Amino acid sequence: MSDSINVCLACDDNYSKYAGVVIASVLANAKSDDDLTFYILDGGISETRKSEILSLKSIKPCDIKFIDIDERLFEDYKQVKSHKYITLASYYRLKLPSLLPDVSRIIYLDCDMIVTTSLSGLFNKKLGEKPLAGVSDIKKKMVKNNPTYVNAGMLVMDLDNMRKQNIEEKFLEWAKSHTNNIRTGDQEIINEVCRGNILVVEDEWNVQSSNFTNRSSYTNNPKIIHFTAKLKPWHYASFSYHRNLYFKYLQMTPWKLSPEELKHWTKDNQIASLIAYFKYRPLFLLRPMFYKALWYTYLQPNLKNIFSMEDYGETHRIVKIFGIKIKYPKRKFAKLRSENAYYYYKKNNIDITTLPPATGQIRDIQLANLTLLKELDYVCKQSGLKYWLDAGTAIGAIRHKGFIPWDDDIDTAMLRCDYEKVIEAFKKFSRNPDIFAGYVRDAKNPAQYMIKVQHKKLPFLFVDIFPFDFWGKAMSVNEQLEKSLYIKGIINRLKNTISFDCPDSELKEIIDNIRVKEILTNVISENPEDCDLVWGIDYHHRWDNWFTNYNVIFPLKTITFEGSEFSCMNNADAFLKRVYGDYMAYPKKIGFGHSMYIELTDEEKFLIEQLKAGLNE
Image (tube, rainbow, N blue to C red; front, side, top):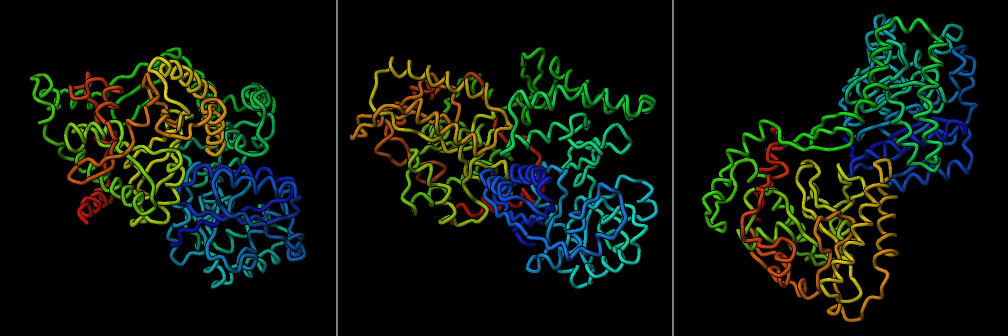
């Protein structure tokens, strides 16, 4: 199936803003390698609104195309008598095979939706000979009468197959013959014409989130949320379990709300929505679904502010009581940790440089990550960029001539001038199309955004690249520590003010502006040897001193790591002693690899073996 993902929405100027929120949600959750093209069936969108929609490309590069609609093509559909809320734009999708003659497949989305994951899995569904795929409608009566009756708000449309089966013509013929008794507009036309010829996919691809009715869906992991209630999230007294997610993506658009407006439309709205529903349907108090909705939407979120418990990676949990966080190991992990041989070596004071390498899954992941490091080394050599082994990987190279036995990731660093070129360098020189460099938002710290070398199919593999900036002069240690405190203040400010709602592009702009205007304000010396280097604020280090003298890093040397030669700092010993103290001694706590205990699928195990097999090529 094609790597390009085509998405279609239909709207007029009134609904174009809501279509923009759908697009923002798709882009925000797309994979780094998703190639997205949006086709907007234009029922009269203003040039101003088109410009605003096009600005959404800043979230993630994509194509956005507006398809002018000649309403004369829909004269017959204007005669259809249906619900008053069904607009002519709803019928645009019925002519997609001819409106988009060069498109083979497309996902159609209504404008009252948000997407919470990459659409690649949905777009590449195998439809066989069926022209359409969708999710069962929440109206049980409809599905009972027609088992393949789907909600038309989300459709995967095999346009080539629809052309082959003359589906577009059949839509029109059926509509003409039933003009006076079509109740649900285009949805009814689609389901009647394609009865038995639609692939019904998992509910998570169209979670039809209504209000207190039995149509509400509390699917744990909704991938597409469809606000099917009469009152949509942009109506003040609307109510939905998923409502606040809508505003998360609205805040990524040109129509973002001020903090006061956001509070008005989210927190203040909750009381208004309850009162409105009590007045509208007081008998809902007798329905169990009302109390389920009340629990999920109001009580549970508020209780989380008092007490909550959640996973912290694969190995720990975090308990939060009145805002105080306590991290503790999971029982299985605590048992494995107590049995770890490296604690035995530490207890018996065995020479740390003689420890055997890791075994089992952690070793497999180490060697797979080594392949990513070798690809970074190759790309940098081909493109003239400089990198060096950093942090724990530099310790491992000196102390073990390879990985620290209980570690599995790889740390590297670059000067900013090379760091900002490495993504394009990978696109040009990488020998493995699955290995790439890209920005990654930290899952636990919304203000941290840095480049990693990654694998498209193995997300737990990565090589960190820490950026270093030039500080315009060399300083004494006391001066370095004083400036480090200032930088830590900036870091704390970022942590407290940046939320996960902040788009990646906006976060990068914020980081770049602070870095240039608040940190690197002094003039750079013409002689770099007279300068210090400072860690970039892209990554929130915990070190006391954020500065390193240029001569500690340059000129770069080579060092042996897992049997191969890689770039290393000029004086790694001085650097590591300053950062870690006695790095040749056992640490107070022996950590564990990021992916030591994850459960790998058979496909992931196979891919890891392939990466290991290519180490000597």
